[in-house]
Length: 432
Ligand SMILES: *Cc1c(COP(=O)(O)O)cnc(C)c1O
Image (cartoon, rainbow, N blue to C red):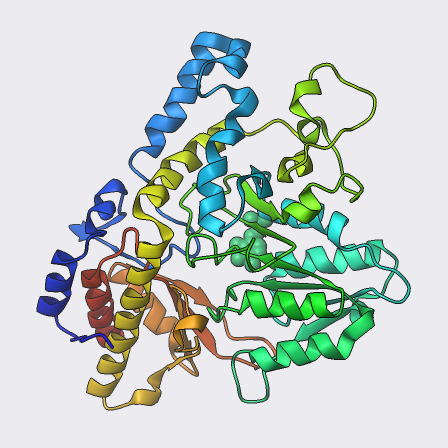
């Protein structure tokens, strides 16, 4: 498909032709000794856009100059500051503008959405989730189940890969949904698995969930800013994501949430309420009864964290300019090149079994990230690469022995280059 070559000349020439290449200059790239490091950790903490500081400083200055009047200053008044992120966020996840809201943090948003979308009854109380889910997601689901008086062991159906396989097959997910049938309340999965990098077919899974009258919600921590999402068209009920990974909003910054309009505009759907979710026209008149804004905004509780939002705006502007379509096209090629380079290095070493790429190879099942599993020696490979200026992420072997140690690497199309990938390959060669 692509004519890859594992050479600096090929990578350099490909970067020359890359129409997104100039976005790299919009970021601070961490340095290692005399040169830029190879930063493949955008799936964990995205880099800082150069403009972030200006956006944040602007709000600090307005606060210094205007005090409380800042709430109503023209254009960027804090009263409606979250509106500034609405359109770009909606485009990013393929939603209508009133289906998204930027608020809180990921796990908080999961809980708020579960309050509305997990209302179990004695017959319908099960949740399908992934085995080996990100701990915060598992804790959120466990605690919700137990808070409703059910037993997590019974209510949580954790999908596992088949014996000897690394990823859960789509057909097994669909079969599990069908098996649960009327007892299923909710399917709650990561759109991209944080550990294996597997991308799920969210549309088909949502259809299957609806078939048995269950809801489908997704954690998009590793999907937002990574894939082209179509949450509205896929009919997904709800979703939440963080903004500090692929979205480069800064450490721990304000997160996002999506609620399909058929729910967002349903005033009878129970939700936890706060003044910022109330109809803004009445926010300061403090009516007695909560009147939800007919949009995802009605899940907002508190007034918005302006400094975090200012930081996120700097990055969302870059996503707007680059566009998810072009980013995804580059991403497929960049990650495809990474796979090519890794295979070439293993071949040169005469030992293709030194590591195994557990991320599926098919385009529809792959995002930026590849997960490289080592039976032995992974940790020292990781440490050696880190010492040479390659920033990636190490996950210890599974305690139950289900998997060896894993290095996760994620070249991101906004600021990584084909040369970064080639340099990664050379660092891997040395480390092996
Ligand atoms: C990163 C990540 C989180 C982190 O949750 P926070 O509430 O932002 O701390 C949760 N779930 C998944 C799947 C993640 O990848």
